[in-house]
Image 1 (cartoon, rainbow, N blue to C red):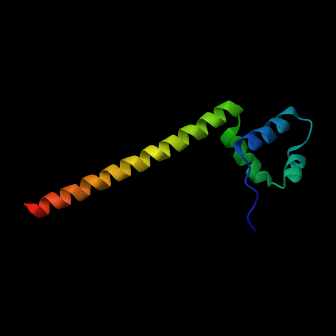
Image 2 (spheres, rainbow, N blue to C red; image 1 turned 90 degrees about the vertical axis):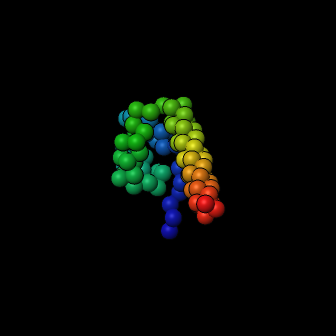
Length: 89
């Protein structure tokens, strides 16, 4: 069974709720149907991050993946052109 996918904002909201100390980590995880291990993984990943910083990080990761795709396509085109030029010679 596949678990629920939480947004970055949801993850940070749960981390901040735990930081306030009103509820224990186990209670927060139980309400969200989340394992404590996942909670601590999120804490390591998003621990001191603000929601705006997390959004910016997500945007940068998306931009980085697009740039990597563009580079891969460019390198592939170059290899094809080099192969065609070698065959003509």
